[in-house]
Length: 458
Ligand code: ARG
Image 1 (spheres, rainbow, N blue to C red):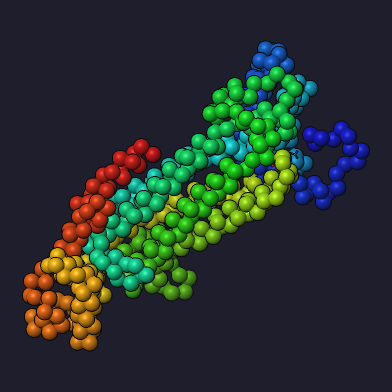
Image 2: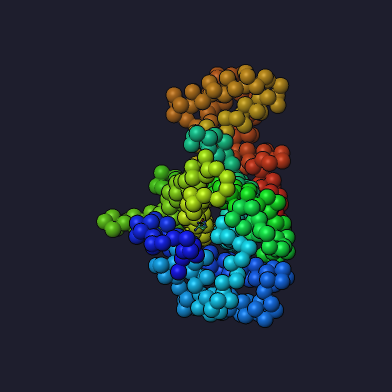
């Protein structure tokens, strides 16, 4: 039951059939193909190419086919080349020759481009919801830990103390940009290729603008050749998906570190951690590791499609069939990973005592000391040098800043009068960073409120 048998004498070789069949993966587009078919049937009827009675029968058959697909009663067969072939078989089974009228004015080239856009626009909405759930989990923890001091790191070395809530919210901003990117993507994806036919449009009096509106697109494609050749929307989606993957991977890597014995910043809930088949004591961060690991395939999917597209002449080429598996895999992967990471974050217990105790480690208050000297009028260059010497003194004598006597302070530099101890407090160091965007708990709470408002709007 091929859609193109007329000019061929023999049947296709088995090797060709096996190579070209796509129904095993494009079958998931069936509901979208049926939506597009309904819109196309209406346009054919408005063009006078289907009578009212024929239209009613075609729509009835499409509805019934939709129901049968959902119920699993109608399934693709091995002999169906692709989703369009399978559904045309279903239509012919229901309508006989009338079923053959629906193909007028359209091609699988504009159909597949339309189906994939419909599928992706629909699934991107679900991905956005899952991102919002992850943001909500991170914000819930940030709310509890706005005041919790933690070691802030650069180069994975203790740098300056930060609010742990501030650190958690830093990830929310990244996911929030991802959501913006998907929304922005949707604006460009909201262009409907149906009506472009194989490449040149149609000689039949179709109404692509009406079809576009009916399918929820903003407009019809202004160039039929671009419409069937363009997969920018898929590549852009795969890029947005890759960046989400990278953000998940960076968060995952942090969680792996935090859960380690060396950090002990968090305890993962049993429901979101795994054990070892040999070491009875193990509690492993597999969710975070898989979030990190899956970013590889997300990036791979983007590379795969870009490589496929590169060098294709206009317009449709069968290479474009290779667009679907990377797109589906990125959708599936994100929908698997996002809820797991959201659950891991929502249920992890933060070891506030451990965080607070290690916040000043590594002389993390050194910048505060230097900035105190700056407030006393000493050039920062000189202050930086003096505090550097103090650090060396401490290292040699195995002391923290707190443990230095007045004499020791004065010996390193006359600038270090006893009052410098005033800035050697972690809560003080956090509260002092109160300019917009800083880690002061008050600013973190404001940031959280603004993010909540933004996320509500997303
Ligand atoms: N399975 C094809 C794809 O995914 C559908 C379009 C086929 N068009 C064609 N002229 N062979 O791209």
